[in-house]
Image (tube, rainbow, N blue to C red):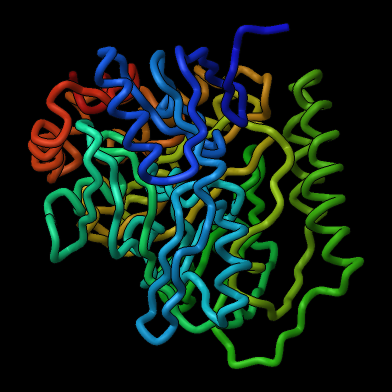
Length: 433
């Protein structure tokens, strides 16, 4: 038996709220927020728990959106789809596909709720297609007084720009209208490459492909590169056995065993990484976009990710190489590097600047504090902006130096939630009280 009612996916945070509500409609969300206000308590909505921070935590009313998971409308001619906040991205993908539609871009995990993913700034990689929050056209929100508001670039634009990646600080998102487009195929090319070659060809690789990313295995000079580009077809998905071998057996089952061994015997990590980097060989296939973008991720880990100005990426990776060479850390998880164009979402880590996202991970149960601290110093030295849903130690004093529209967003917050109904310890740190 335990008194903990909720924990996140990585088990980095737990909470025991005073009240748990599973609303069936926007009206029931509004009623729960008004009830919290009447008792002077706070309220938060938690999604699938894939944030590594305590962004969803509350000591008041916890809203669980599992029943808010319907598609309200798909308008392929108007290139939009309205879905409820608790719908998981994988279910959004299936629903859109049934209408011949797709999201323009998405991240590599699809089990998050659509509201949780947009509110924390979740993203994929793209030369011209930005993160999920930049694909939001309209929001339906329950404000701190229990009123229901819709906002867009034309209707209450300041609230819209602040709340698209709003950390849940401006209201409870109950529905989102996303930009969609006709379903499309991606030609996926995955190939090992030496880190030096990736850095030498970086401009070509990231600008010559619609979607480029790479995974660098620490303590080695080995990477796995991924290039995804649109093609007219026909579809040529991976053979079922190859897909199982690579994505289930090697990337999940074997990788779990490898990381358990590395946790017990950290001195073996460099040798293990050499083997891991060579286990995933080159492959090509053509499939529906959402099947290419997202992959199953069942090995539990803890993650930190920063968006840095893309022009600093090479220097940052050289600094990271020096950190690994120092011998202070033994890291069995690859470093993930993705790219995003500048966007206009006020609190997006890619706001106003072309960005490289650099993500570092450790296997669940392994110490991460010193490793993350060393690399956070590297990222913040180039004005890096942390992913809101991933581990970091930044506070308002730092964030206001790297987010040029942060104070504009805080003015909106003061207007729509002056009593801080939606506050928690995390928001107190990053947005102030």
